[in-house]
Image 1 (cartoon, rainbow, N blue to C red):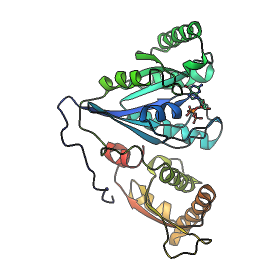
Image 2 (image 1 turned 90 degrees about the vertical axis):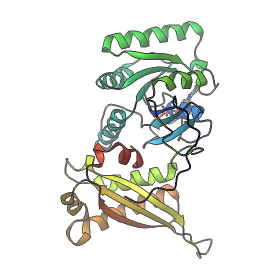
Image 3 (image 1 turned 180 degrees about the vertical axis):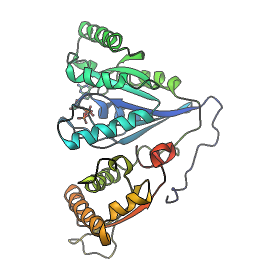
Image 4 (image 1 turned 60 degrees about the vertical axis):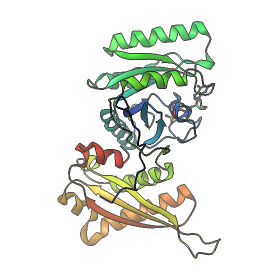
Length: 318
Ligand SMILES: Nc1nc2c(ncn2[C@@H]2O[C@H](COP(=O)(O)OP(=O)(O)OP(=O)(O)O)[C@@H](O)[C@H]2O)c(=O)[nH]1
């Protein structure tokens, strides 16, 4: 693994300090990204009124004197219709298993529907993760409707055998009860020191997106067992110096991690042919995303059993 950037941690951490990971889940447009931003207080996640723009795991970090909440913003979960959809759902499921709290968002301006039930049923399968329900967008509903909505969430929990640790109504855009939500999440985190340096709000969304594009290219056409074993870390992304202003070039250095030597061979291919294909496909995607010509330096490394190593998982953005 590459050496991590030198962290600057808070020095006067008291013994009651708590820290952990929270994943907001919910159907597309449920308001997860907006809530993440409201909690962090800065725009870090990608929000849009078009469903499913969030295609990757972007973290926001809430720093408090008593706790650090690391928010994992997962893609909107939906019934898989495409292979990519299945992969995204796999990514979501992998994220859910790693976090301390899964918070399910149910928008208050809409009745609970089949999409919400599908997600809640998936959440119900996580036996060891604390579950919280969040009624989002309360500014779009009257008191009576909000009351009904909270009852419906509670009934859904009973139906699916989910024990909600909390059911919290919030409006991220009005800033209503967002602080309360953070207050309620803190005691649900395990005791521990901050996981991230003070002041860090998120991994760069661009780097996370670029990593996801490379991962997608590497997954294209590989056999079933490999997808779960591939992870990508973008080490460095920098505009090359000494380029004319109208001919910029972005240097991207990334590492593709696999779990075993045998997988390394598969990813690299005969005389490196497959890795070159992956590099070309990923480079084109990155250029389209960022609008800049890209030089991609892609290396393959074995990180033994990274899937079972929470530290590595976090570093890789899971
Ligand atoms: N009125 C109101 N609108 C909200 C609130 N939260 C989110 N929205 C809007 O709802 C839409 C979807 O919000 P997002 O935060 O992007 O939803 P998401 O769940 O992250 O969506 P995906 O990335 O598609 O899964 C956007 O147009 C937001 O502005 C809220 O509290 N009140």
